Amino acid sequence: MEENFLQAEPQTEVVMLISIGPVQEFIAQARKTRDLWFGSHLLSEISKEAARRLAEAHNARMIFPYIHKEKIASGLDDLKVANKVLAIVPTNDPKAVALDVRRAVVTKWLGYANKAKEELGSGIIGPMWERQVKDFIEFYAVWSELESEEKYAEVLQQTEQLMAARKTLRDFRPNEPADLFGDDKSGLDSGRESVLKPSQYMSYAGFGIKNKETLDAISLVKRLSRFTVDKKEFKSVCDVAFQQFRDELAASRNQWMKTAVDEYYRDLKHKYGTALKLTGSDLQSYKSEMFYTSRVEEAVVELAAEMKKPINRVKQLEITQNILTSLDELYGKILKEPTPYYALVVGDGDRMGDALRKMKTPAEHQSFTEHLSGFASEVERIVFKDDIKGQMIYSGGDDLMALLPVHRCLAAVQEIRQAFTNTMTLALPDEDQRPTLSVGIAIVHMFEPLEDSLLIARAAEALAKVRRDELAIHFQKRSGSEEMRVSLPFAENPVNTIVKLQSLYRNGYISTSFAYGLRQLHAEYLNLKAHGSLQKEGLGELLYFEIRRLLLLKKPEFKSKDEIVKEVLSVFKELEQTDSDRVKDPLVLLNRLAEQCVIAVTLEKVGGAYGTNDTNSTS
Image 1 (cartoon, helix red, strand yellow):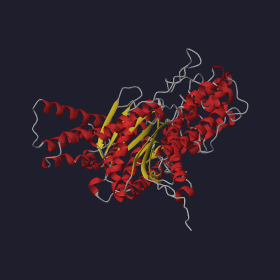
Image 2 (cartoon, rainbow, N blue to C red):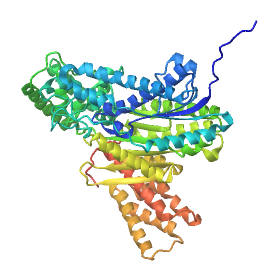
Image 3 (cartoon, helix red, strand yellow):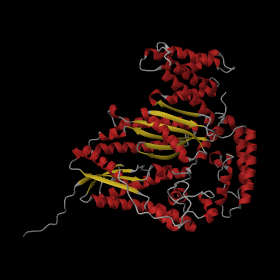
Image 4 (cartoon, one colour):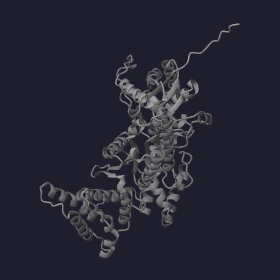
């Protein structure tokens, strides 16, 4: 008897690459640090949903991010995902797979948007909200057939080329005009209208929305993440900047200052506890805004709005004035104020594409991405350490962004760079192909708009990537009177040098005038070189003795010549050795040392552990 069998059509395998956006502009559109964080978090969660859908519904082998069935079963909460998803999918209909993943991604996004909309209730312009959220997600998917795993590298390169070509094509969507001519534009995205109602601003204060602030639907989804995402309190730029003050007061020698600060805050809670939601029972949990004269009024408005029976505007202004008076008295007593500066740090791996293109098999690629996931987790651990106390914005693969206290930023960057080096050593035993890490640090004032601060940090990162494997630092005073921008090779241990110079400045061995004197010395010799009046032979030794002369000329009266020479000149000893090293240019080295000296003095002034925070002094 002949039996008939229904045989399933054999499935082919495709390498599928998915890119989800928008990315940079969406992340950067932020007024508060939580907005900035949530932009990155949202993209990570949406990309994670794409990976989950591929793995669970389509039995895909995930390459980036690398997740296996056991990982999916235990949960993906801690997984950090970039906006790119790569997988090998068994399917005869890749288009259907891509459309299914797109639906999952859009559904995930709308879940966040709908939660924010529910919180706002009738306080928004509904039709305009719906129009803005429905077409927000950018989703691109391309694929190529994988005939055999031996051809993986070739097929992957072909797929990446398809993605690059796809992104050059623009999507044209039908125009849906605003309800009224002259609608207010969003303050964070001028391409969208504000969905807030002018008559509702009193009810918005509890959501951290300022009076007359105009926000579109996308920006509101980010702003309301505090109420829609289950995550503990997020540090503001004010909190991060204030950490230096907390650390300084925690030192035993400053117990008398801490006592005065504790009394000030207890007095605030006693007087205004029924009008303001003032939390914090110790130095580490005090509301940082209550220690900055320029932030008190805004904080009073927001803290009052969080109470069941908010006080009126007149009472808010009265409380604000009283707090400012108490704050002036506090600083008059302790003669110390917290720094308004913080560090915005961004980092990116160098030549990652070259390393990935050398992956011959899916297994090699999976192993590499698993190591990158481990690095992302390590970065987060470093940033949140008790001796750093920063705020992680984003850590996915070789990309990172964090807010750090100025006095801890160099130590954190040094540790992050070492973690990356260790990760690459494990992932790529062949030293010739190991990627490096370039890092940009922007030292910025808390009043600088976040979008502008991020641009400064990105510019610093770009400067570091010119030569790669470098640390670039950009500092500009809010007054605009002083600017510092320099990029230093990690191979020369710049952090150790800067930390040493900070210690020398803190202990009175060098002064601000010495640091800027080094800059002037470099400029003078550079001018001589430009006019052909400088011989290279013996230049390093000459510059070394010039520094010795400058050092003694600028030495503090309470230090002896022998003390100064012994403690300081060792930092500049390498200049003498450049005469026997044809590769090293003495003037280039002098420039780097001068800039490191200026950096050290600046960091101590605006946020050193024992600094004066007197950013106007040049003595």
